Length: 135
Image (cartoon, rainbow, N blue to C red; front, side):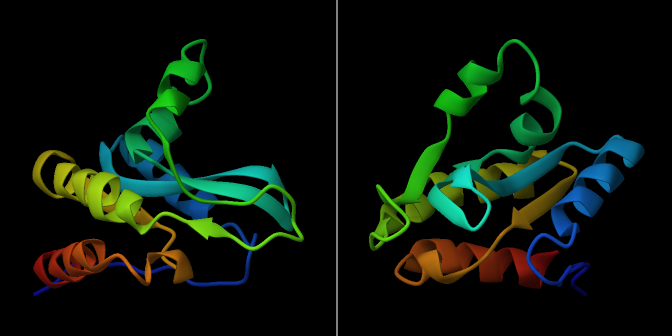
């Protein structure tokens, strides 16, 4: 029987903060992915995949630039008026890798956020469904 928890809510309502707090309190080693952003709230310019272990535990220190180099942009635009350039291969490669890593070597699998940018990433979608069925 799957053992999944889904958090839903409005944008910026604190869902990711809840996940981060639970992981830290229980001292868990998270796998899967977190979506990082550049730009400003309501005017994002890029989105990228981050290993949650890096995001929650290593992001803030003096080595934060080394961790950011490991991220891969999956959607970007130059200005908020531009259309998104989407790179589905990032999900099918880096995304599947991060999900495999979480499934096989970490305490839990985080998928913080799933949305429209993954629509052309069939390998990634299959991996998400596999994990949701197996957990």
